[in-house]
Amino acid sequence: MPADLAGVVERFQGRTVLVLGDLVADEYVYGKPSRISREAPVLILRYLHREIRPGGAANACHNLHTLGARAIPLGVVGDDEAGARLLEFFGEQGIPRDGVVPLPGRATPVKTRIMAGGYQATRQQVVRVDREPEGPPPPPAEARLGEVLAAYAPRADALILSDYGYGTITPRLLEAVTALAARTGLMVTADSRYDLLRYRGVTAATPNEPEVEQLLGVALDGDKALEQAGWGLLERLGSRLLLITRGSKGMILFEREGRCAFLPIYGDDQIADVTGAGDTVISAFTLALVGGAAPLQAARLSNIAGGLVVMKRGTAPVTRAELLSAIARDVQDGQP
Image 1 (cartoon, rainbow, N blue to C red):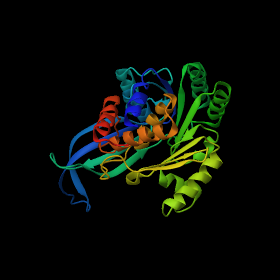
Image 2 (tube, rainbow, N blue to C red):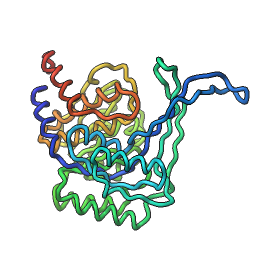
Image 3 (tube, one colour):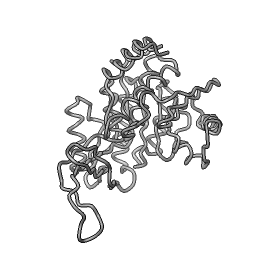
Image 4 (tube, rainbow, N blue to C red):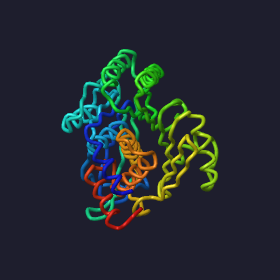
């Protein structure tokens, strides 16, 4: 099986995947603990540095790119520093930017994480501050996204819907995606934080366990409850595949044909950071499926990718070389 997975990864190259969704800037502000404030019982951090990384749909694009595919982002950014940095990042990586619509007066979604720790110590997140846009993109931006979607879809192998709740995937754009998929057979996969049932009929969806609990309004106490919930959700979605990620417990794959498989976590269960792991999982899963992998193969590959990325701190991608190296180690160790 591992040797077969390496062949699937080799087929990532040359694939084109559209990513329609919320382009987010993940900002990290690093500081070293200094003293307790005399104004209030709070810690004062001595500022060290800051960085902005691609998050949300932009992180999915980053993962697709480092895995060897051609990623095409479709979304909006504001005329602010965060939006400029995302556009600059795409340019540096050679990721097409004609599907990114800059909007004057709009805020780019920014998640600012304040990180505290000494120079040699592991830095921990102290607090997160979110800056959010008001409402969905205006009609002209929506129309532009629809035009780019229609232009690129005939040349694409798949489309990822990356919904972080900021309104980029409007009802009209979702209708356009549904019509394109029906007409061309385009594979569509969905990762939605709060409203997955909007995406009925997609090829596959990749929620995490807490999202399934919130979506169905039930507490998933144990594998049996999760299995029952997964089958129910797959039926309601009308999808071919459902991959539920479970953090340190791994994943569970549901196939419409009636198969269900539990996958234990890949690697160490002492997770460093889950930020952006869902973007890595859906990127690897989608690429594996368009590369001809069987659903269980695709799930195994995305499980490896997810296991690798959660050992990195902060929003980060997994590279094609890292994935192939992990597979080679499994071959050497005789893993099934």
